[in-house]
View 1 (tube, protein in one colour):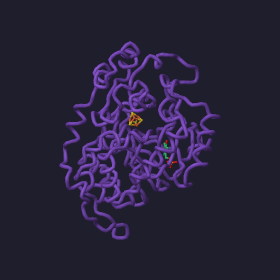
View 2 (view 1 turned 120 degrees about the horizontal axis):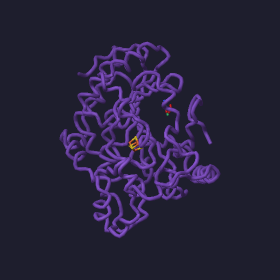
View 3 (view 1 turned 135 degrees about the horizontal axis):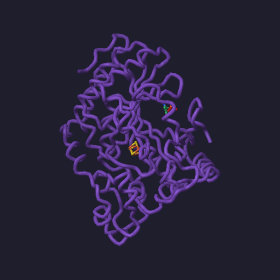
View 4 (view 1 turned 60 degrees about the vertical axis):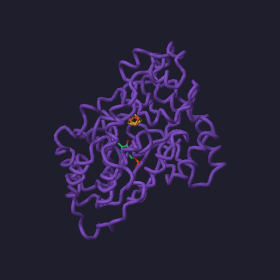
Length: 348
Ligand SMILES: *Cc1c(COP(=O)(O)O)cnc(C)c1O
Ligand code: SF4
């Protein structure tokens, strides 16, 4: 299944890291299945049962709660303002209709050129490898965009790969979703084997939250797959708060680095989660300690149901300036917003 690389691009094989040696494959699927799906159960686990009155049944029906137990374990029991809990709990605030917060906030509907391929920026093609995620983040545009039907996997990525092969300006494929690492490793190998036949590709990127929310996903098979890729691989993870890191996450990230991946983090600026200089600085420093450089700090996509997470632009700029005044330059992420029709993420 592992594609044969052209000799010029062949990377030297690396030794397995200690972290991967201890991680048997397939654990993660069980952890995936056993994710918490009942908001009341989640509250009870955290000694917060008295908050049940603040849950939104409508929001939970439209976009269900889903959170791996490994992530729940990093929430602070008894703290209704826990920054991890806030990212996943369906609350009454989501039911408010707020002008400007719609269903296709980032213009993906218009930019989808062939099933599963989104081409917005020069040189890059984003491939919607699957509609699945291990966690449902309340602020995510995925709560409305019908990625499930768009997923290129439907015909084994044939159309998506053909579209990328037909456009020689594409040098980088970004596996996205959903979460591409929610695909089983043989599926990923099938996809990259098809991409390996395209001569104009130079880089592979993977946008994933799984190493953070379900670090068991980084198992031996995944690392072997990664190590076998014929291109330099960048893994862009997604953590919004320093508390999302723990020793299991550290081990997963170390193993990804040992397999040759460059690690970056993108975060979303979220009111009540990370909207302070202290929280953002702690996130950037904690990520770096785990081998991850900050990449983007995104202004929220204006999706219906997420208005209560929004931080005004002026405050976002002030927070970013505070970060820049405090941290080493390479620990400061770029503050950006996605604007439909722009040639790249727009700096604020
Ligand atoms: C964000 C995004 C990219 C990647 O942009 P970078 O600035 O290179 O990280 C590529 N394609 C689409 C459609 C995107 O939304
Ligand atoms: S992991 Fe990413 S794509 Fe999946 S729900 Fe969360 S923010 Fe959205």
